[in-house]
Image (cartoon, rainbow, N blue to C red; front, side):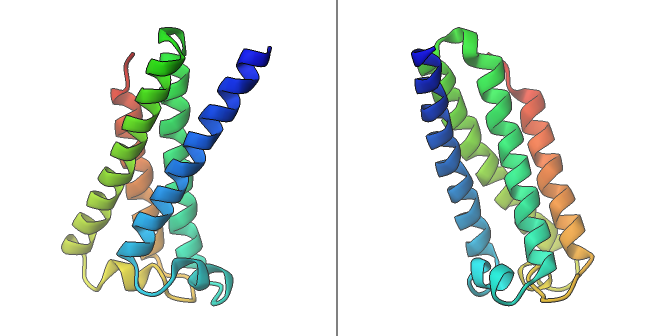
Amino acid sequence: MLASIGYAVAYTAVGLVLLALGYLALDLLTPGHLGRRIYEDRSVSAAIVLSAGFLAQGAIIFTTIWTNATAGFGQALLYTVVFGVLGVLLQAVAFLALDLLTPGKMGSLVTEVGFHPASLVSAAAQLSVAAIIVASIWP
């Protein structure tokens, strides 16, 4: 049981770092400080996009751990880091591609104080990218 507790702590620490990395990437892609947009300005759109990013990243992290756990702790942890970072990068690419394909500036649209439908489109893109990555993970 102690080994499992240690694994849980290690995976959680890596997962939190990957979630923070995803947050920082989205913060770079949007104008202003993302945390202030959500917590001070109360931007529903920004909260939707960040929430989808967290759920997407969580799905990738869960899948890498779940599918690689029998390969050994070191390999499973490595898969988690690699696919987690890949998820952050590909979600950023999807955000930028969506920005090129749609009118307006995606970063500005998804950080408006009020609800903007672009936040749902961006959230769906993030979840879709995560689903593709999840489907590609194999031990």
